[in-house]
Image 1 (tube, helix red, strand yellow):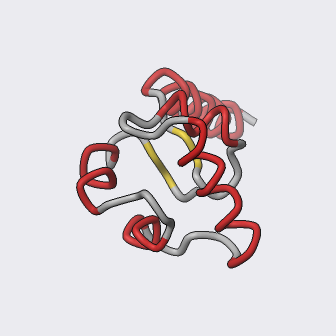
Image 2: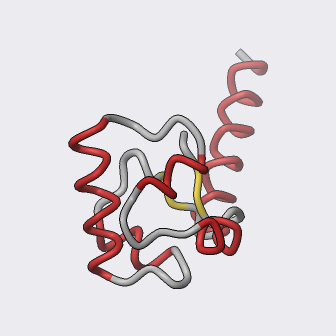
Length: 86
């Protein structure tokens, strides 16, 4: 029972860190959350990310974002610490 509590606490802290750190899951987030979390990405680019994801499925790696019109490798590099795939 104690082990379950410890494991639960670890997962809760991991989740809290992701929220505190401003991480956004580009495979599940809506356009508003993406635009708020990513620098250099406004509402239109965020909508393009969501549209691409809906049409092509989940992003398998961060570099897949470059397939979205308006998202450059520079934008991806600037946001690596702000986005996650999981």
